[in-house]
Each structure stands twice: as C-alpha cells, then as structure tokens.
Image (tube, rainbow, N blue to C red; front, side, top):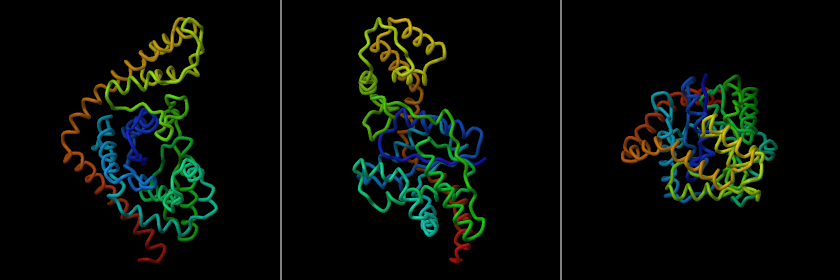
Length: 320
C-alpha cells in the first residue's frame, strides 16, 4: 500500500506535530511504501519571510530524520523540488467546483484569524489534491480536522475521471487513534496559531517553562481529582510507561498529587524521551550537504512517479 503525507514548514515543530503526524508516519513507513514531503508551497499561503522559510524547511528535515525517519525506507522530499505538483494543480482546477472550495472550512478559519485572503489560500485544497493524486496514493493519514480536504481530493479526482477517463485513484483516509488532537498548554489543540505549543527540540529551560505553564484548575494537591480531563495527564500518557501512567492516575484519584509535581514529572519524562533524538539531531545539523542530498534523492524518486501520472493527465486533457 502506498501512503502519503506532508508537513508544513511554518515554524518550530512541537509535540502536536510529533504525536499527531511524525511518529505515526514513521511507524507506517516500516510497513508500507511511504511518500512524505515538506510542504513549502503550502507554507507560502501564510507569507513567511523568505529567510525564515528556508530555515523552517531545514529544521523540518532535521527533526524528521532525528526522530527516526529512514531515507532508505521512505521517499522524503521537498515539495518545491517536484514542480509537477503545480502543473497538476492547474489541470485539476479546471474541474474543481467553486461551491465546493467556498465551503472548505480551512479558508474561512484562516482568514478569520487574519491571514490575507489570497487565491493561494483559497485554492489550497486543489494543491493538496494534486499532492495526493500525483502519486496515486492508496491512503492518507489525516486527523479529523483534515478529513474534509481529503474528501475534496476524492471529489476532484472523481470529477476529472468522469470528464477525461479513469486517470486517478481515489485515496482513502487513514484516521487512527495515533492521529489525534494533542492538547496544548491551554487545553486547546496544540497549534502554533494558538501559541500553546511545547517544542520537540529546544533549550531545557524553555521546555521546562512551557510545561510548567500548562493551564490547570485550582484544586489543592490533597484533593482527589479526575485525571482524564487534565492536560498534564494527557501529555504524560504519551511518553510514560503504562505503569507510570497508572501510578500518576492513582495519585490524582486518591488525592495528594499536586499539579506542580505532575508537571515536573511530565518535563522529566519529555526530556529523557527525546534525549536520543536530540543527540542525533545535533549530529545531523553538522552536515548540511547530507541533508540536502537526502532531500534531492527523494525528489528524484518522487519525480519519476509524478512525471508518469502527469503525462497521463496531460494526454487525457489534450495537451499531448
């Protein structure tokens, strides 16, 4: 089975990125043919500073590789190194219904948060469809908040096939418990937009400060508490052993576990869990040429597939 996923280089990657996308993607690559890309074309919709964007792309590559992504088992590349994505986007846009795009919640949400109402932001789902369809992906790991975009990709593929013949495979969503909403320091979904993230890699002081800033209720340490709604407990479950999770849960339920102590336990667990990855990242960061070669090799493999699918689409619409 061929799976595909992309991640935007829009800032420092955080625990939400890791547990929501990166860790599941790395696991899937052990069993399936995986195409993973750094979505720098998509990142342009937020109009980042060019220097920042270059740095974000490099950091995403470093973070993914440090977290265990294997270039030998995965086709890992930078989206902009495969220009076929953009040509297919144009071909798909000729059949993409305007009402469908107008109903996409992402455009409404992002403009409501102050992003400029650009054509790129509006047509984001068409580029996302091209990202998927150009590799004939069988499945796409998505969170519930991204499911609509995959449905759009399926609808556009079906419309294209109806008009020009059976060119594209209709991908299936792969929604698993691993692709879940990760709570941020304020209890909302962890997102750079909400400024509530805990970085995967960062200075010890910074990560400790973020963990200790997690919002909790005002119950006293000796009070018995239900741990399940607690953000600290939810994050702890992602990094601690089952026994450690059970022990923290029992202490909360029986009383005697203060939120400050729980946050300290969470920080220590996060720091030690990511320690091997931190060391690996420091080594990788010393060799820019190696990182670039991995991305270029991945792009070359991706283009071999993308060119073949694009050629079929061009022939179908009469361009060849």
